[in-house]
Every structure is written in C-alpha cells, then in structure tokens.
Image 1 (cartoon, one colour):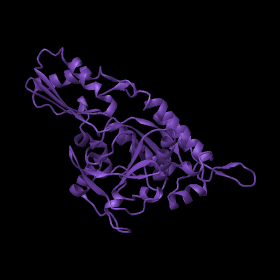
Image 2 (image 1 turned 90 degrees about the vertical axis):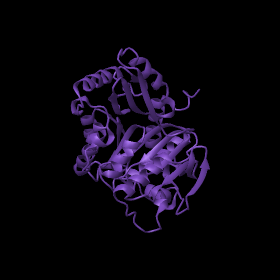
Image 3 (image 1 turned 90 degrees about the horizontal axis):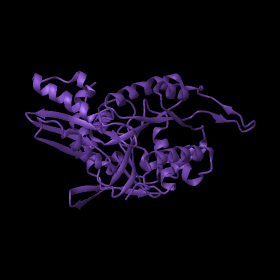
Image 4 (image 1 turned 60 degrees about the vertical axis):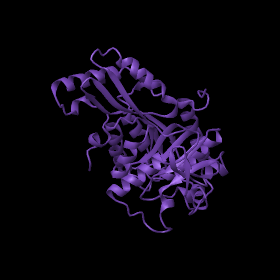
Amino acid sequence: MPNLQTLSQPINPSTAIPIDSLAETRKQEVVQHLKQVIEPILKNDIVSLGMVRNLRVVDDYIYLRLYIGQYQHHLQEQIQATLSPLSWCKKTYIQPCTIPGVRTTLAISSGKGGVGKSTVAVNLAVALSLQGAKVGLLDADVYGPNVPQMLGLGHVDVQVIGTPNGQRFLPLEAHGIKVMSVGLLAEPDHPLAWRGPVLHKIVTQFIQQVDWGDLDYLLIDLPPGTGDAQITIIQESPICGVILVTTPQQVAIADVRRSVHMFRQVGVPVLGVVENMSYLICNHSGNALPIFGNGGGTQLSTELRTHLLGQIPIEARICAGGDIGKPLTLTDPSSVIGQVLTHVAANLEATFCSRSSLG
C-alpha cells in the first residue's frame, strides 16, 4: 500500500526529510505559526485538520496548498497575517484548493463493503435536502457505484459542457439532489476495470471537473476500504470531515479501525459513526432484536472519542426503496430510519450552519 504521508503530504514535522538544516528549521517554524490558525467550525488548527499540504520553504519564500471549502477563503488572509512576523520570509505563496461553489464537502466511508454505506449516503443526502439544503452526491465508489439506481436514474449519458474554467461534467438531478457517479462512465453490467494512473485520472476528474453550481453540501460516497482510490479522493478533495458507516459485529468494527487510521494520518476529522443494521423490530412483540450483535457502534465511537450519530434498524422497505430509486427517507420521513437520518442531518446543519452563515 502506498505511503499516505507521501501521497497526501499533510504537515507532519516528525516525518519530514530535511533538505538542509536551515530550510528544515524554517519549515518547523512555519508549522508552529500555522498551528495558531484555528478553523472556527471544527475548532482545530489547520495543520491538524490536514488542510495544509505540500508545504515547502525555498530560500526566503514559503509555498503551500490550502484545501478549503467555499466558506473558508478567509483562512488565506489569516495565514498571511500569521506568517508575516517571520523576518526572513519575503513572500508566502498560497494555492487554494477547493471545489467551486461547494461550501462543505463530507465523505461517507466504511471499512468494508456490504454494510450499507451507499444506502446511508443516499438517504442522508435526501434528509439534508428535505431540511432545505442544496445537496450534491458524488458516487466515487469505483467498486460498486450503485447511487444512480438508488436515486432512480438508471444509466444516463453524462453531458460535458463548456464553462469559463474549461469543460466540465454536468451533474444529473434526482429528487432535488445533484448526482454524479463513476458508474455512469461504464457500460451497463460491465465492471469498472480501472487501475493505477487511469483510476487516478478518472477519480481526479470527477472531483475537480464537475459543474456543481452552488451547494451547501457535497457528499462523497467513498469506496470501501483503504486502497488507491480512497487515498486519491482524500488527497485531492477539501473534505471537512468523514462519517463512518458500520454494522454491529466485531468483524466490521475491526475494518473500520483501519479506515480511521487512514483518515487520521491525513488529518481528516471523523465526525461520527452511523451503525447500520443495528436491530430488527419484531412484528409480534415490537422488541428490538440485535441480529448482528450489539454495542459495536457504541464501542467504536468510545474508542474514537467521537459521536454515535445514529443506529439504523433492519427494514425491508429501505432495500426496496433503493431498488426502485425511491429512498425511504423521501417516501416516509416519519419512519424510524427517516427519523434517525433526519436527526443526523440536523446535527450536521447545527455543526456547519450551512445557510445561516452565507452572506
């Protein structure tokens, strides 16, 4: 597996390879100054959040890439002001890396396949949209791109349009949600047999070359696991945080731990855990039956010192809704699943204040 520190290059002084002692000393000094810049919503410094990458000190000049959302451009001015006391620095060059028009980018991830990650992503997108947010959903799961079917799109040709910034993919729209999926580039029922540089190029294009318009949230449905595709997406995206989807059993929990290690290496904060298939409600007694065991999501959230955002029961209708392209959260928002995901969406709204903070 590729080394994450090399690929994504978040700032980590302990692993930096010094070119010469002066440059390394100056780089350490820059890092300490950058740690004084706090992202106000996530309440952590921009270095720990992995927002600063590719930091270089060349002679008397500082170069860095800043991965931000649409609402975070003010951080550039803060960085310039924070680094201005460095007497040796003649100029700081900041390259902002953002997705035009997108205010907040969130990833939906799982340690393994089959835990309902895409189902959660689709229904969470619907829940956010029902609360008035402008939502986009990027299906980046190159191993199982099922989002178009779950939203009733089927196989539709992707249009390419000309913009002032060059040619861009035009997202589709379903149930008020803008959608783009890597699965739309493949023939129906054919595998996405992409590897290495081709995979990297395709994934990068879907992140950087989609004309999303104005969005409060862009949800990225990541592939399961911790392979090349996941690393590329994390490396190229201004992801503000990740929501982990798991099931209660210990096997799933063990796989999620590996994903957490990957996110923490690149400084992406884990916003919380959604436990899917938590229990089955008995038709006769109304009791909750923990078919796949219980306590896994609680255990994981305790280990990670993060929130257990919700526990989703096993419900035949959520599967049926995904098959016919009508998400249960849309058709029956008062259902138990609809209520759980509406609660998760409300927590995200309370955290990111997507529309109330727009000027």
